[in-house]
Length: 196
Length: 137
Image 1 (cartoon, each protein chain N blue to C red):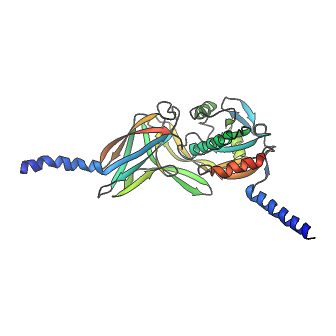
Image 2 (cartoon, rainbow over the protein chains, first blue to last red; image 1 turned 60 degrees about the vertical axis):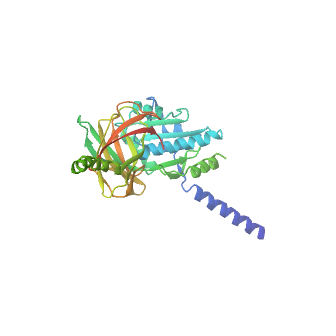
Image 3 (tube, chains in turn purple, cyan; image 1 turned 30 degrees about the vertical axis):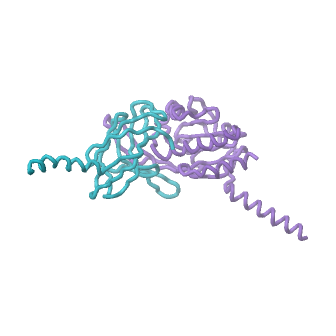
């Protein structure tokens, strides 16, 4: 009886610990949002994430602060994993500013950062599809400060959610992190836990 | 003697420029035509505040001072700021997730290690030129 009780207590602690490590468990494997990658190729979201642990963030490339920080933090995660020869991880960056972030713009954004597009993908698409995908991750973005350049070109910045999300290899959303203030060790350990 | 003192006046006038120092300048790497952020620290060693009101550069024709701010619920935004007052005897940081200079539509690709020349305009100290290096943090 005591043994059964001890086992139950240990099991409940383990279960609680797992929930705390991965507080979300949302199935995204049926989310087939059509996206366009940095080379202009059409991809479906659920096919991109299938079978791999995925780190995903939503950004816009005209952002001078939060979004490049978020991308850089993802690069730091990538580098840390590569040191341990963990290469089977997806890094997805999706733009919520598809009017300006064309595949060509996304390609340049990746190239100037020396990002390895074998493990990374930068995506745009039609606005409605992108917004539906953002809803899955509770990410919001909308234009804010607007001005015109001296040549009459419309410029706007965006208010947006500062977030990186983690999806497991079964296509289940598991956790949110701050994008610009990412705790590198936390997400690294979480990825390793998912991979084990 | 009076003439000697008269000649020394310009030296004290321009000494105000020594009160402001701009250190640790850097900007985010960026591709041609896109927007980046310039960051630096301003040290005001003088007894009076000074105001940064304009910036120009050889890598862009349009620059603005901006502030990144938290809107709550993990939402971040940016807004333009017309000027920044650097109080006397203080240090003001233009840093990530805070005040920065928006550098619009850069004229060419600026990968890591690129140099950009910037001129900061202060009401008291006048023009201060800096060279910033591109990096990512």
